[in-house]
Length: 265
Image 1 (cartoon, rainbow, N blue to C red):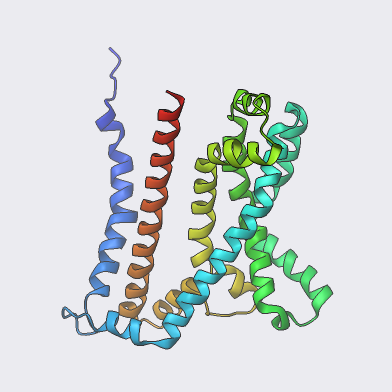
Image 2 (tube, helix red, strand yellow):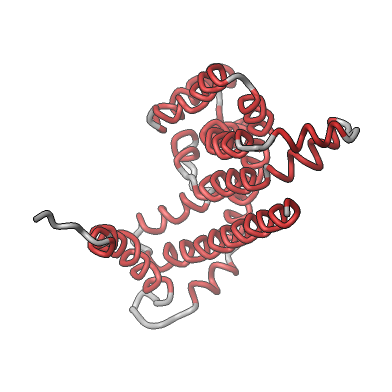
């Protein structure tokens, strides 16, 4: 007699993995974030964070980097995804593969190759540090913006576009009133996938400039110096920011989906 596993039994390995590698490390971070070096309950680390010009400046710099990276990726990815979605089946799949193919290569190899290319054209990379950071971020996260937009646009019902054109709407109005609103879920998904990791991605700066002037690097520098309290505080603050942004994006997506459903009814 064959034994069939229930869903609860199949979920046990995942639950164990979740506890050991997500919940338990998070509890450790929370413990250090709300204690001082003596292990006593304290909020001085949070006060120190908001009084530190260096930490606030790093948070602002990281936010600016993430916003610019997201905006540039969106401006490049949207027309690219639209062209791919409206192309013929065979050609669209081949073109999409060209954008996804770099993701199969190790991240450090891609950034190292781009660094060598920039060195050939610029010589001293420090002269254009901000520009090079944005360029490397966009290069790294662009596929994460293209894929959700492509998936959304391929599912777009052309009958809405045809109906708008039959009613005399201009192409600009068709895009703004029909295509763009229907592609909002893909935009929100792409923005979330690009903004959140680009705000904490320290590998680009470490590989190109050996800099700690971004939130991920700042956290790593504190933990490397065995200052787990300040490192945990910054991690918790970043976690709160990420949770807020994720909650807002999910709520906006659900609201937009409900509105479109009601309009179709």
